[in-house]
Image 1 (spheres, rainbow, N blue to C red):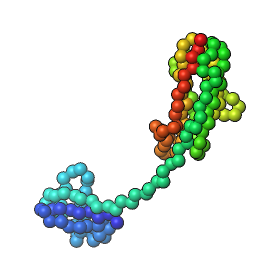
Image 2 (cartoon, helix red, strand yellow):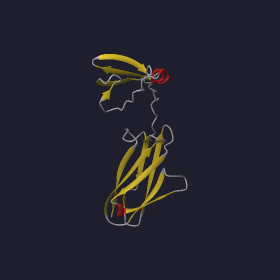
Image 3 (tube, helix red, strand yellow):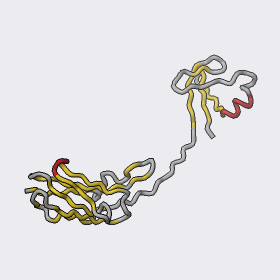
Image 4 (cartoon, helix red, strand yellow):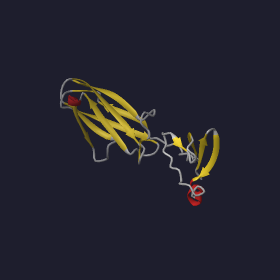
Length: 162
């Protein structure tokens, strides 16, 4: 039950919305309250409005995040147009998504095998070093990626393109 406490001239009156409505405030108009504004009482006095309400906290059990248990780049130094195999192994619950990225973006092309996103092939497009990053995500409706920033959910490696 939500109760309203109205202070008029330093006196407190505990009122329930139902009691005010059913009693009609003893023949007087039911006062209206607007949060954030000054309150004028039935008798014309000015005071504060304090609302008491029960709060129920629902605890959510912690999420078990997937983790990266292995990451491989073979070979880690390749010629331009030569492929490099990228492998990823995970532990824990299956991730909602495996997100791969390459930096610089123009450094090469990632392609994925039929087995899914856990294994990829990288092919250099130019000489230099390319950083390959992979992140595991666990997407929960209305909460997003609940494992964002958790240890062992992301890793990077470097490929040298010659």
